[in-house]
Length: 382
Ligand SMILES: Cc1cc2nc3c(=O)[nH]c(=O)nc-3n(C[C@H](O)[C@H](O)[C@H](O)COP(=O)(O)OP(=O)(O)OC[C@H]3O[C@@H](n4cnc5c(N)ncnc54)[C@H](O)[C@@H]3O)c2cc1C
Image (cartoon, rainbow, N blue to C red; front, top):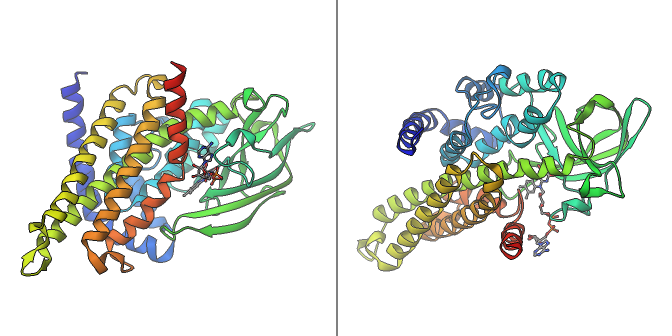
């Protein structure tokens, strides 16, 4: 299809998603922030729009969206609250996509339909106390038994593990090989003896974003719990992260766009020294710089999505998108708070909430430094 047709189709889709988000989601955003929970009614509402399992095949109840469509929805949801996009990723993001792409038929039948209905969620457990940015140095060990595997070790900072029904666990299966074929992925059901959530923490962002510590103590699983081939866990996690980075880039883009609208409206409305803030050059420059950065971020994302047929082409660009959009959104949030004066730092104001939520995205899903490392390595290799 020609680019113009693709762009027109996406513009139509954007308008209808935006209508739904603006009409239906604001009260839920407040509820999620207040209670830290995603009520079943909200999940059903999102499922009815096809927003759960967006990238998953229709056969399993998904919406079979292209990466560009998925990113568009993430952007629009994030204009209301970035938490909605994080919620979606537990039903159709990194781990569900890995099951759809590399799982056995039995794994797909068991896990995907409940995810797309909103009945269950899945968490992704890679990070450990001794292995964050340097993920290949994980030490959680899966040892072969007669019937399957026994897992021992500890994971931390795992998003929504406390409310997920299944955890995708990345563990070492061959210490001699490690990232070169000695790390594998497993699907472990909640309630399996030997797996326990040992701590749940909240962040500076929304109360709904929990990070859990999970302890594995001789946790025995059947051999059917292995996802993909033995030793493919690290590659599987790395390739899934490319989509995750695009998703974060787009949610930051949506939030930054919304913040610019809010800050512009406030600057026109608020008067100091007898004139609107918007008349002051200091404020105009903040808005102008933000609008310029936003346009540059959008152009980078659009160009990357155009190349998205070939994942090998977008791996480095996805890092650039994640790095740039999360940093632009951070700067935008900071300026929006400044323009709002004291109102910008009072709990409950929209800009204050965005400011706190957006800060997490420069660390999670690969920090800004790790994105720069990926980009620089590629540059220097060529
Ligand atoms: C909101 C949130 C959600 C998360 N969800 C999940 C999840 O669902 N599943 C999961 O497995 N993990 C998750 N994580 C963990 C996340 O992947 C790690 O926090 C991240 O990889 C960084 O690891 P670390 O916190 O141990 O920092 P460290 O690796 O200790 O790094 C500390 C700081 O040093 C920098 N740094 C590290 N090495 C270098 C270097 N070589 N050069 C320059 N700078 C460097 C880092 O960028 C960072 O700023 C989440 C984290 C956050 C914040």
